[in-house]
Image (cartoon, rainbow, N blue to C red; front, side, top):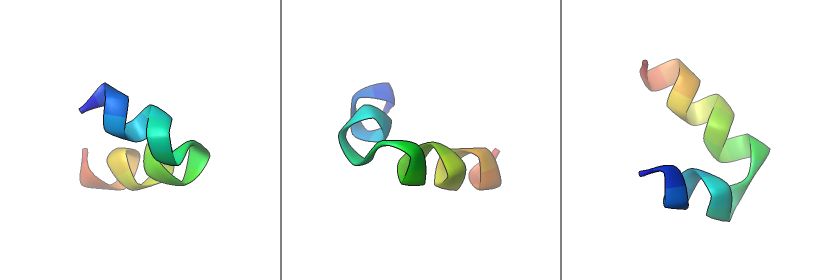
Length: 20
């Protein structure tokens, strides 16, 4: 999961935060 976030970057982190 973290790998995917790192792949997309900040966009992925924001999306993950929204999911949480």
